[in-house]
Amino acid sequence: MDWPALLLSLKLSAWTVVWLLPLGIVVARQIAWREFPGRAWVEAAVALPLVLPPTVLGYYLLSVFGGASPIGQAWQSAFGRPLAFSFEGLLLASILFNIPFAVQPMQRAFQAIPDEVREAAWCSGMSHWRTFCTIEFPLAWPGIVSALVLTFAHTMGEFGVVLMMGGNIPGETQTIAIAIYDRVQAFDERGAATMSSLLLAFSLVAIGVVYMFANRIGRRRG
Amino acid sequence: MFATAPIVWAAAVPVVAAASDLQYALTEVAAAFTRSSGRSVKLTFGSSGNFVRQIMQGAPFELFFSADEAYVRDLDERRLTLDRGALYAVGRLALFVPNGSPVRADAQLNDVAAALEDGRLRKIAIANPEHAPYGRAARAVLMKKGLWQKAQGHLVMGENISQAAQFAASGSAETGLLAYSLVISARMAKAGTHVLVPADWHDPLRQRMVLLNGAGDTARLFYAFAQSAPARTLFEKYGFTLPATGH
Image (cartoon, rainbow over all chains, first blue to last red; front, top):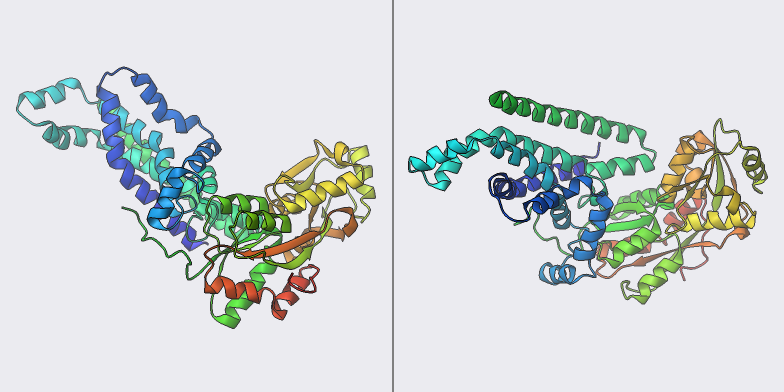
């Protein structure tokens, strides 16, 4: 069992969730309730990582943030280390790659709140912020929890982008999915088997939790 | 803002990028280094070509063990290395046949040629010649034998030589042209038989290592250790031919 790789994956997943919780809520509410020109394209952009091969995203991330790019060089001179092949670069890639997993369940949860409920809150003098805190968030929270669980689990299992953007650096960018790949190549069957079964169990539990919450929303609607 | 404080460039435990034919040999060299110096290094294995690309993009490696000295020359020309490095070993290509395969291992690849003709041979595992030196050596051998065209459609390419070895050792391919240093390891020796391919059938796999810009003390010590007698013994144990001097 490669504990540093597991810890690194947990850390990456946790930070991805921390960033995507506020970002996802802001974007999901806009798409859920507001009509604006080009909304279909915004939704398409949000969904894009679902259909894009991870290698395509990895390629563009390396082109835009790699050591030869202006952004990569600016980062290097500001922080004294490259953005690509570092934990920060991996986190950036992970946030971008998980946008649909965070936004879409939240969007569906916000859409399920009837307009009258929010209007009634405003009519009774509640500010938009208070309406969000006391009405919208409690009603949408099963969707928000699903979004966070999906994001966390998906980050744990992400492979292609991590390999391209992070390389395979123990303790820095070697996540558990990469460590499994490494163990297989090193003919370490036992190591690969232990870590694979752990990820399998973890993913099953995560998806189970998501379905539990999804059923809860479904019952309320019906 | 981020989870980790910026790490000093030359880290206390340097990351060493190594060609994957060193999977076993260098792991033992690193263990011997830690026993004798009390310091440790982190090893990461992959194809030499991929590492070169990553180093050009700023990957934080301090020392690079290439399977091909041409890659080290490329990095040197781009001023990414401290010097021209040192030759540490010469690799050999071997024909590996997993247990239960219908193909026999012979140095002249005669049975491989016959098996390609009569359909016994469906898959040959090699490393990707685009970025793996052992893949290029395998391609040269197949060309020398006049089998390159016939082998098209039968090649399974590993991203690096370790992955190619995995394909062959698991029996997914009936044979493989692999690094000798991998096939004589305990794990692979159990999984099949092997024979050395004539060394003059491909360009010599002259393996060079080099310290990269920003290399710290530990990386420099490990670089010196890899040229010392105990390390040379370990490289020899894994079938590498040793250069007379480091240059």
